[in-house]
Structures are given as C-alpha cells and as structure tokens.
Amino acid sequence: MTAAPLDALASPYPTTVGVAASTTDLSKVYGSGDTRVVALDRVSIAFREGEFTAIMGPSGCGKSTLMHCAAGLDTVSSGSVRIGTTELGTLDDRQLTRLRRDRVGFVFQAFNLLPTLSALENITLPLSIAGRRPDKQWLDRVVSMVGLSQRLAHRPAELSGGQQQRVAVARALVSRPAIVFGDEPTGNLDSRAGAEVLGFLRDSVRELGQSVVMVTHDPVAAGYADRVVFLSDGALVDEMTRPTPDRVLDRMKSLDTRGRTS
Ligand SMILES: Nc1ncnc2c1ncn2[C@@H]1O[C@H](COP(=O)(O)OP(=O)(O)OP(=O)(O)O)[C@@H](O)[C@H]1O
Image (cartoon, rainbow, N blue to C red):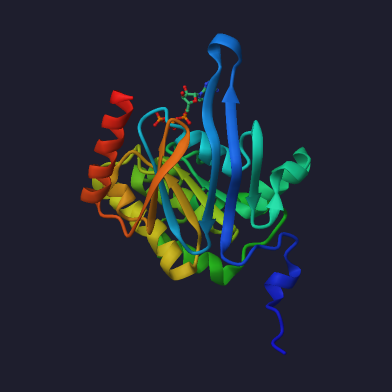
C-alpha cells in the first residue's frame, strides 16, 4: 500500500482531488425592493487544482462578486461555496478568517503593502500573523521565481509598481494556499510590468502547481490563463480553454452585443 503524503494527513482542510474551490447554485442579491440587484444567479463552477482560470464579462456582470464570494470575502444569498472540501457556510467568523488566512492567497489591483516593512517582511507577514515560520526553501523558490532576490531589504516606496505587485504575488504564494484569487491584478500596471506579473502567476501554476483565479477586463491578460469563463448578467454563459487574446476579444464583443440587444 502506498502511504498518503504527510501534507495530506496533516492538513485540517482536505481537498477533493482536482478541485481547489467551487460554487454550487451560488446566488447573491444586493438590496431589496426597487434597489434589488441580482449580482449572481445560481452560478455553479469548479476551479481545478493547478489551473489558471480567468473570469471575464461585461462591466457589472458579477465578476468581482463571484470572486469575493468564492474567496469567502463576502456572504452568499443562497447556494454554497467550497474551498477544497470545506463548505464555507458551515464555518463561524473565526474559522472563516483562519481558513482565508491559511488556505487562500489574494492579489488585488492595489498592492496593499505595508510601507514601513521591507519587501521580505511584507512577503512573510501573513505567516508571521499566523505564528508560522516560513519554509526557507519554499520562500527562496517563490522569491527567486518573482525575481525579487536583490530587492528583499527595500521598502515599497523604493520599488516600482511592477516590483510592488511582485511582492504581493510572493506574499500570496508563500503560505502555499489552496488557491490564489486575483482581482484585476495588473489593473494599475503598465503593459510591460503587467506582462511580468501575469508571467509570474502563470509560472506559479506551471512550476509550483498553484491554482489561480483572476478577474480581468483585459483579453491579453486572459490569454495567460488555461481557461476563461464568461459571465453575463450574473450567469455563467460560456467558457474557453487555451484562450488567445483574439479569441477572447471576439467572444467579449459578442457578449457586449448580446447585452445591448437583450
Ligand atoms: N455592495 C453592493 N450593493 C449593491 N449593488 C452592488 C454591490 N456590489 C455590486 N453591486 C451590483 O452587483 C452587480 C455586479 O457587480 P460586480 O462588481 O460584481 O460586477 P463586475 O463584473 O465585477 O463589474 P466591473 O467589471 O465593472 O468591475 C452590479 O450591478 C453592481 O452594481
């Protein structure tokens, strides 16, 4: 008999093989009466392990809401969300905070670095808060993958925007989360720095086996993903594997046209 990997035995959060996070019939309604908005309408989706997924769709279609609900940052109106096999609805606030801290990495449009800390201290901050020591080998690997080895003592103000976002990517990866969520992670970067950050996110999937989900408006950014899912009016309407920017752009145009004519 083959022994189970130690990591799997030790983890308090077992995963369903192949699925890093999923939603089932997830709905999210904001407001009530005249101001009622159905932001998500029974969305069921699985984000597979070791896959880079982009979420796209017209403005207001529910991309950020889906990401926030799937990451446990927002409550759901109905349906369920799982990170691995843990159903978020079964957790109290403390358990949810701990699960987000231990199992989920985030990269936002704003870099959200602490200005008084060095790049290295920013990267290891989530582990410090959790009272965990960084795994030195893993830390070295993540830092060298994002090309920050020579910049670790610098404070955010001494780094370019692209370098700051690389610190944020390293911070998201360092705890080996089950899944990393990015909300427009290249929205504040020029195209060259954006391409670098997207390349690092893709490398984290290829080289480290990370699972990544990214919301983006940009067909070029979506071209880095393995799979693109398209939302329209709060519903999943399409998906594409091995996307190219041209194919994504075509699909987006047809969604925009559909939105305007319906
Ligand atoms: N806190 C809120 N209160 C009320 N309505 C909200 C709230 N947040 C989002 N919405 C509405 O829910 C819908 C989906 O919003 P969401 O931000 O998820 O869309 P999006 O696809 O990410 O948009 P964008 O591409 O413009 O960022 C929109 O109609 C939005 O106006």
